[in-house]
Image (cartoon, rainbow, N blue to C red; front, side):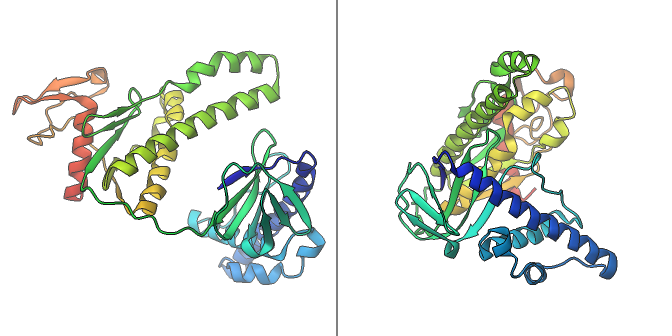
Length: 336
């Protein structure tokens, strides 16, 4: 749950605390590199906690925050399989202050952290105990407080429905039952305003436009992923790669589609509701007939504009994206 901090003077205090968290992160980065050079192995979260013990008071942080930074650093090194992570700086890194439930006290619309009180806009009630969370800063300089709370398990009645999802650019999400989800291209919509602001060197305006595009895209992804998870018990989605397509002339459209964020949202919402979600290899899903499984569909770059076709083997008429979604669902069943 995320809430925006509304105190006008809070940002100055949070910025200073964010600098202290950057210091702890960079220290962990430095000692971890030295450990690799001398002993050939990384430092664990336990080791980093021992090295940073008793420094919280001097940095103005809660001791649990220092531990949370060390744990996040060790987790990131292991996840990305790297000996060194990026340094956190004042200019390039947005503010971030993690905390654990014992380090904060929430009362109505106020959160108390290490002797500081911050008021936030209480858009939704906090009905249960806070386990952990963080303060974070966005690109416009606004601060937010995030809470992870204990919540009762949600049980949804099973309906046995299954669906395959084909992610694309012309239609952002096409389901195997023929339902299509699409929205306007936000990058194209705001590109003129963005160009004018950039030429006028209005940095704050440029940042505001980028933030608006990001928020609109995030809002759409949240709504559509929620609708899909609430409707189906099994979801199969293609493993389309944004990184590869961003190197082509379709880069702007691929970035605007936000496939990666959409799949992440589908994943954690599926876990929450007990829905089975699987990401499958979508190779040849477009050219394969979903009825007879023969590769008779239009292939190659010259055939990208062909949206409907007829199978030469069985004579079945197909809509390109719906057929691909049906194949993705079949691939998940067969374990491809």
